[in-house]
Image (cartoon, rainbow, N blue to C red):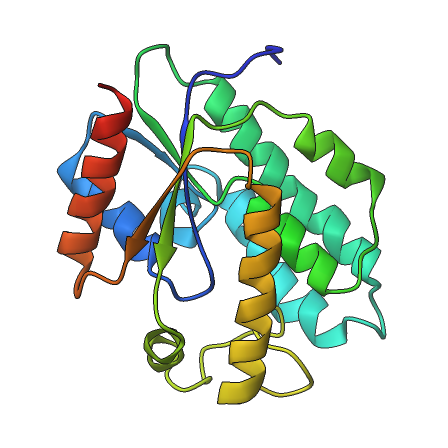
Length: 214
């Protein structure tokens, strides 16, 4: 594995900020960019093992977290996504714009919120090359809650407490945002407020990253 990764940018945001939709829109409108994500649409064909591990985390591990499985076990599984993204970045050719969905920042924040202490894995992740810029999607709590279909789409790593309510969702997302911004405070960041639809948001992301190349 190369000691240095190609230049890349990160698309970041709390749950239901719209990152997956924006990544899909970017893939359709900028085929010359490399869009890297562990989302099912980006892994289920080319990287089925990654997609399968993600499903097992949601379907098998999270319902038994704290009983059959420890937070550290969860973190060990989630690390596979971190390494997968790092490896895919390393395989991108020079000069190709690379945009990564969340990198390790969101996974690290969720591990901490799940009760994982300052695990040695985190120090390793933090030693990875930094992105040149982060584009952060900022959406109002009410918008994110509506996108979650009022909690019916949430998994246990997207809300606080034993069951999803608007209050537990907002509380968790507030803490998640705080940790992610702490982890990325020394990296140039462009914040994009809610734009109304996916096409406009993706256009704003394209402009933010085009400015980086000037």
